[in-house]
Image 1 (cartoon, rainbow, N blue to C red):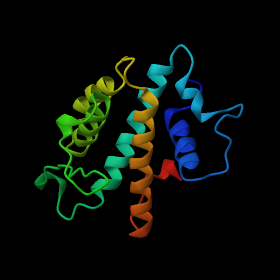
Image 2 (image 1 turned 180 degrees about the vertical axis):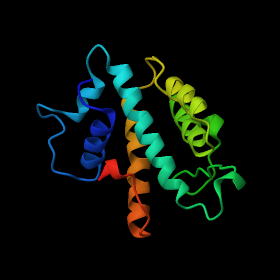
Image 3 (image 1 turned 90 degrees about the vertical axis):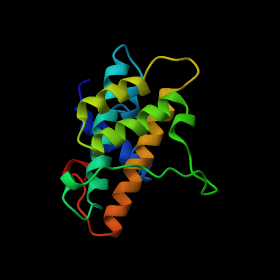
Length: 155
């Protein structure tokens, strides 16, 4: 990858937020999905997005992090609880990667990201990328609404 994963992640966030960048242009952020080393590039971009999302979510913590164990309350469109184990394997792994990052377990996050991108014809890695982008954008919007900092590289 010629561009740093953060640069690609920043472009993808801009497109997701409705930016006017052409995602298919000559320096396309979507190039992360093609080429012989696409798996490694996509993994690096996801790692940056998960870390950024976790960092922004940690801004919501009201006590020192050492006093916390983070969990996620997942809900469907109707507001009903979602059981993590019932999710498709790549989504389940992405949720667990975020939880690992929130709980200061980067080695576990790395393992879960590898699971999220496991080659399986039943699942499209684009879905994992889109979900992760939505989480990141949602976290950015929360930070903006609450005057909380976002990672400087996302600006």
